[in-house]
Amino acid sequence: MKIRALLLTAVMALSLAGNAAYADSGLEKAGAEIKGAIEQEYKEYYADSLEAQKDNFHGTGKTSFHEATLGEGIPYYQLNVQDNSISHEMAGYKFPLYLEEAQVGVIEATLESGAWTIYNISNHNDFDNTVKRLEAEYAGKGTVELIDDKRYELDYLYINNEVNETYIDLTNEQNISPSEVREAVSESADALNSMNRNSNDGAILVGGGHHAASSDGGHNSLITAIVLFGISLVFAVPVVISAVQRRRASDVLQ
Image (cartoon, rainbow, N blue to C red; front, side, top):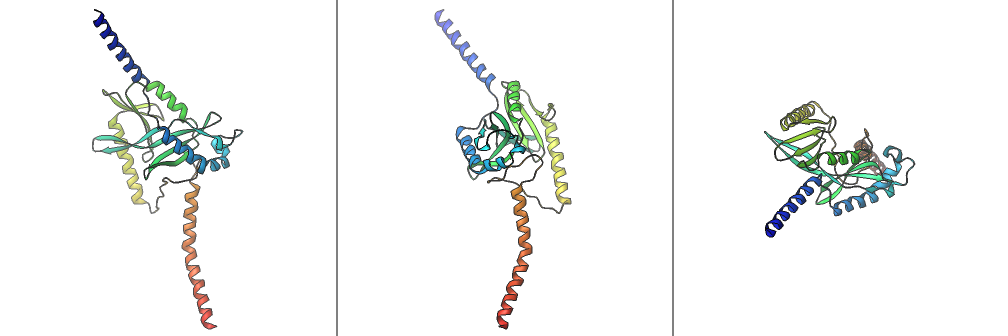
């Protein structure tokens, strides 16, 4: 009887421990090494830029952006739709940025050439509260993943409890089935292809490297400067060539 009681106690303890771990599960977090690398890159390359845009990044009246800290990095995914199947491809991490314990922005990091680097910094200041609310509401209900696919302007939370899978549109909190997601992606892809065929304008994709931080609705100033510089070079080259030719002609005349 004692042995049986001990076995039952052990089984119950293991079961409770497993349920507790499952209940506490939520969105994954970036490792300390990744977080440290992004924090170092921020301080070295981006703190000055955010300090110069302090008003745009909710920093008015607060300490220097050189004192800002990073919160936990949450992985975000893009959708890969093929025929009737959907898979998720990890695109990077989102780190809330804090100044005096208040969130003032979000740092997006992506993997480039085997190293994690900053891709973009936005002035969204509600990301941390949203993540905490989602974790409190959906932790323990299965696999939980954050979907942020800018190609199709989709901002979803994915939940898979091995019995049912669903997407929650974070813009309106509505549940969306996988079939509806496939349809939305297909329609967006067709619209993008149509726009590309009817447009003569080229697109500039902002990738990794040390880009300037941007606020909502703004364009990346560094990319704009590069484009303008390239255009100026196009017009400058004929002038330079003409000047060189005149100089040579003058030398010959002399």
